[in-house]
Image 1 (cartoon, rainbow, N blue to C red):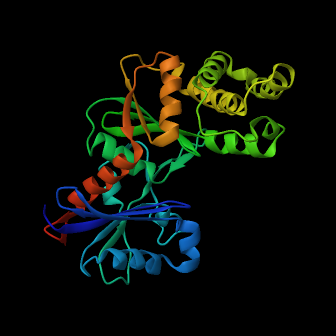
Image 2: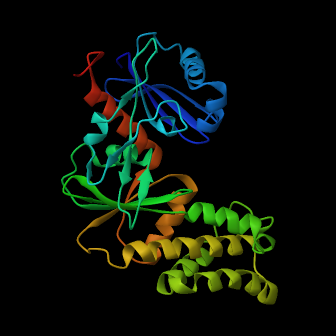
Image 3: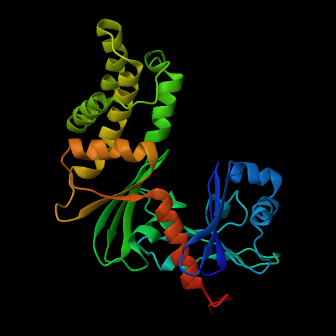
Length: 309
């Protein structure tokens, strides 16, 4: 195994992930913490990064490529956005150099949809796309990236043509924590009630306009007929995911593949949802995608330890 070639960092709002990589894209070491953008803005981005580099004994001259919220307006250095339609290779051209640092540090930009009727932005997900699809994807794809703010991306002609953000995860958290539904989900364990979830997905997908009523039924059903906290939680989740899928799959081009980029519990839930609706799916692990995207970026930006012009 060859020695270290560069450092890859996924710097989110509340999380920090760093990988020490060799030229072949293999992980030689990694660091994780809750020192996301919010914490790093107080402690100092440079000092947070250096503490993790020191912990791994990273050589002084090794370059660093970063994606995510470190490039936001309130982050370390604003990396801006590439406008749609955006070829994934264009992301590399917009990489911003962090000045005043002893080593070369580049932050990748996000993607913006400057459509007054449907404005949208992404930051971090573009690197997952870069990892899952490559620099110049030849095939059309509809990509679903679940999360606090789920992204649905239409890739056509090698470019991100359109995308839309859905606040599904944030709405679930608010509904389960701050509404009457909190009484229904109290004490829920980790086990997924697949039947309750799948049924809720199908019902909301068929009648998304009833979403507000379907959510109230969660509490009414439990009061009148009983049921577990897990079933209530999965019904809330399934309802919100069902209306998200209804918005994105109703007019799907049958010949276009759907790619799910997700990890952990969300990956499982969305797989159940797609299976319930009989939608064929290609699944890519989200962490592997972002790491591979950073590797693709590093390979394109640096050669033999020097920056490409």
